[in-house]
Length: 213
Image (tube, helix red, strand yellow):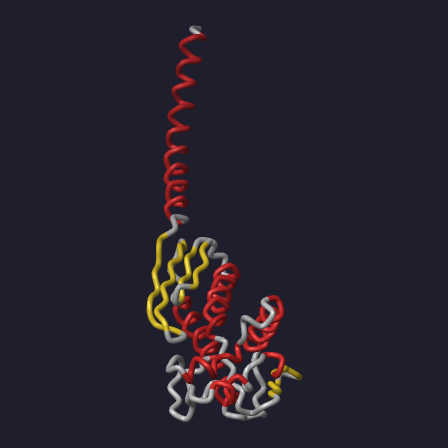
């Protein structure tokens, strides 16, 4: 018996079997790679009174992402937008002492207090009354910069405290404005949202405040 010939025949049969096995395995592997391919998605619009742009990469489009962005923007607007008359901060600025502020407000208030202390008062969320008197921020015809000293008496973040989620002001006319920090805070909130969704490639820009990963 020609054993060499027999070995060759056996090897050919094995190779044919491997080809049949490898082809579908290769196809499945290729399909798996394609399914994991990440595509770019872009969201644009206006929020917090300024344009925003969000770019993220994901292997599948999540229809709930845009709704979640709207929800985050609405929450922060309702909490801290001085341009919305019925927002919590607008009600507080108008002297309403019954408002129970949300987590967004508490976090921004505490961070603002921290920065106010570090900057020795140069960062001051109560300075909004001065900017309003000079035509910046929400329009208010009742405020004038003619008497700057009386306006300065309404500034000073030490005159504002938070207790049991209520804002306590030494003077009801003190005007709070967190716009200098709110957009950056919103960027961080959205960034954390993406991380929680296991979306680890994104760029978020809101009014010049930006975070990328």
